[in-house]
Length: 155
Image (cartoon, rainbow, N blue to C red; front, side):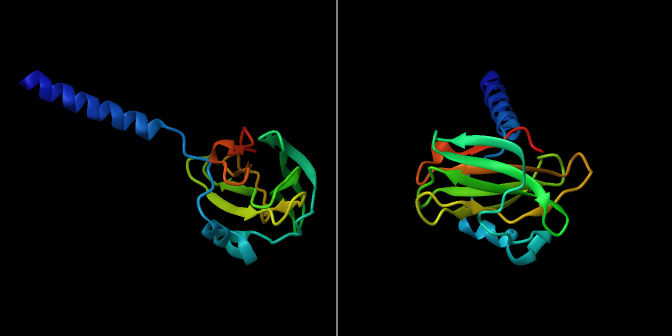
């Protein structure tokens, strides 16, 4: 009986260890996440949906939508996410921002693509010389969570 109890405890500890070591999800959380970065909250700046800059990271989501992490000058040097290409109404784009190297982050978005072929941006956040102050751009095709993808590595 004692070995069964030890086995159960071992399995519980092992399971908890793997759960703690699993990477955090990149999936969009909720529309409320936009409140973390719109209208100047947390130092973000709202920008036009078509704004581009110098590409830092680029990826294609589901073979259709191109998501780019840009940097450029908008009230200082900033980074932001931008979606374009074969977008459809309901596709999502957002930017994750971390100040501790990705241990935790603020999700700026998701922002909803309003109609087919539209571009969309996240709000822009200032850059910082700290190596732990980083960004990544993320996107997901409408109603297809399995297509969720973020630029890697963090920049």
